[in-house]
Length: 402
Image 1 (cartoon, rainbow, N blue to C red):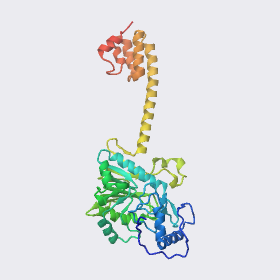
Image 2 (image 1 turned 135 degrees about the vertical axis):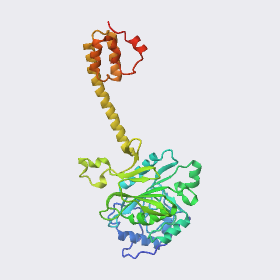
Image 3 (image 1 turned 30 degrees about the vertical axis):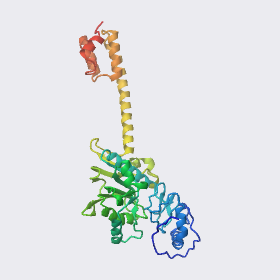
Image 4 (image 1 turned 180 degrees about the vertical axis):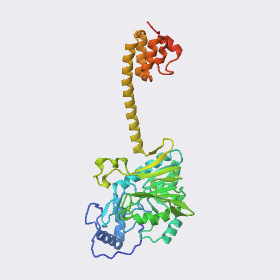
C-alpha cells in the first residue's frame, strides 16, 4: 500500500457522531453544515488508515500530495483549494458553513483571464494558464509558514485561479511540469503574474497567506478580484493590484484599470457590457454573464477580450453589409440617371460604366459628373472611380459617343 501523507491537525471537538464519512460530497445537501463537516473531519483524524485506503481508491490519487483531514476529497470534487488534480472541482463554504459549488462566474473569470493573457502575450514566450497546481521550493514554504499564522498552511503548493507562465517545449514540460504540475522546486521559471478570484471562504487566505507566499516566490504582480461581497459583507466589486517591491507587495491605489509590466499595457476586469441592458436589471447578479478580463490595445484604441473581439467583428461585418447595401442603392439610382441623362453615349459605354458602378460603387458627386459629361461627352472618364482603369484600358473599353 502506498504511503499517504496527511496534515497532523488536532481533532475537532464536536457533539455530532459520524460513524463513517460519506465518500461522495453532495453539494446540494442542506445537512452538510459546518457541524457535520467538523464531525467528518474528526472521524478521519481518528481513522487515518481507513481514510488513507479511501484516498488511494481515488482515480486522481497523488502519493506526493499531503492530504488534509480537514477537507473533503472525492472522485469529482474537493474543498481543498490547493488540490490541483485535473477534472476535480473546487467546492467552497458559504456564510452558513454549508458546502457549495464555487461560483460559476468565478470559474469563468479564471478561464477568460487565461485566454486574454495568452492573447496579450502571443509571441512573447509567456502564456496564460488557470487552475494549475504550483509547487514551491521547500525553504520558501517553510519560511512563509513560520511567518504567517494560517490554519491551513501550504505543505508543497497551491493552485492559483489564473497565472502567467513561460511557454515550454515538450522537453521542458517533461522536466518542469511532470503530471501537469508547475514545479518551481525543480527549477521551473517563476510565474511573473498571478490572479486570484476571492471567495467568501478563502478571502483572508488570498489576501494574507497567499500574498506572502507569492511574494516570497518572486511573483512580480499579484491581482486579486472580488466579485462583490467576498472580502466582507458589502465589499465592492473591484480588482486589486499588488506589485513586488524589495521582496514584498505594495498595493496600487484602487482603480478601474492598472498598468501591468508583465502585459506591457493596462488591464482591467469589468462587468459584461450587456449588464446595462434593461432586461438584465432584474436578473440576480450570480446569473448574469461573468465580468471580462480586458486589455488595452493602443493600436486599435479600444479595450479587448475574446468576447468583445467577436462582438466588434460582428459589428464591423454588419456595418460593411449596411454600407454595401447603401452603396448598391446609390449605384442603382446613379445608373438610372446615367441612362436617362447621357443618351448621347453609346449603349456599350453606358453598360460598361454601369457594370463598373455595380462592382465598385458610384463616384462621389455623381450627378455633378453626369451633368459635366452631358455638356462635354469627352470627359466621360470622370464617371469612373479614381484610378479604376488606365487611360489605355479606358480608351479601348469605352468607345465614347454614338
